[in-house]
Image 1: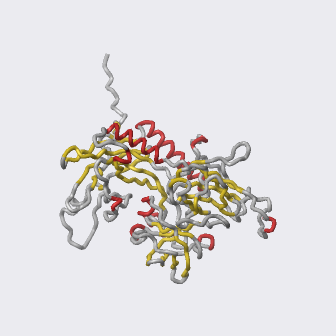
Image 2: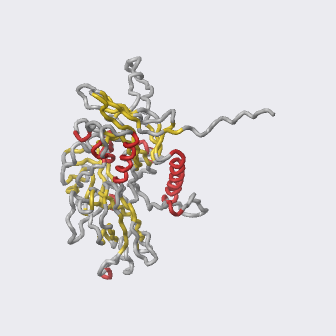
Image 3: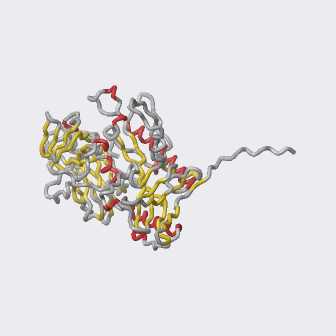
Length: 473
């Protein structure tokens, strides 16, 4: 998550059950966040152990899928309301009621009754499907419908109601939120290798194989190496320090374009990708910002790489080329970008557009950025900055958005990264994003103009029961 964190410390293999505060000690964000992570891990692990990888309560199981054909409109899916658990994460498909309001205008008596009762494929809240995009249309029959679930960070930039207005605009925002994000998506039968007449059990089995193939295999290690000729550096950092940065940082290495190593690219930030600038308007290459950074460290400068983001872009997983800042207009709160963002991004204020700053630069002699991001080079140590280096394991498969966080500390002059007994850095899988999947329905043609929808969901019964009446003897 792109939060302004000091570090992320939760590790399930340590088997910690609680974080206990001690009197008179400094309170850190990492401790409070680890307590939350411990509770979520235990709660969700228990839910999976009890009901399985995915299921819904028998009387209120959500995400029942229906197929709908409408004249002159793209085919659609209906998404039934209710609850469903995927990997222990609660997903709620019930559409919020519009509620009552006070208005001086005349209101139709049946306006509340006309409100839609459930979601559909096209208007579901976190998928941002576009009928104008052929790739978003439902595939030809047969196909499988599945649920994709993950969590993403939401700050006051994306949800202004989080901000406490009493603090004023000059103060930074406070705590962020983790939001459960779900999408109902189709998967063509050709991707599953499943014939037209496949049974629900066959569809579930093939889907499990497909999910296994979605998991990334990229592994990364990090270390610090003392740069050459540091004795010539006039700064106050100790000459023996391998990490040469003047401040503590939480580096974030994030995959931008996915695929095998020869195709993948990455970007990095020394602030965990948390430096963002809300966009109030976008006209071609000029972006007008609500505000610049609070200081030089958190500001925008000519040459910075930025990503133009809004709610839809953040959840679609389709990375666009990064752009560079070519001009900064301080009086006008504007920046000129090196190109026009992809069509549709940051054009709707209701989708909370912003620029996210990245800090990478191509080292001398290294391959030039592709689409603004650095090419993944496997099997070699790559310099980030100030002595921080990363190493990608050869043969990896990478997914956009996968990331690793690397705390760098000046007091030790190194990064905090696990090592073996010989002091060699260990390879780690990505810290996130964790996607979870569940099959919902198998949709196929049973005959001419007859479409069959087989339900692939699981349900569970409540475990409680009345106390049995004592029998008189």
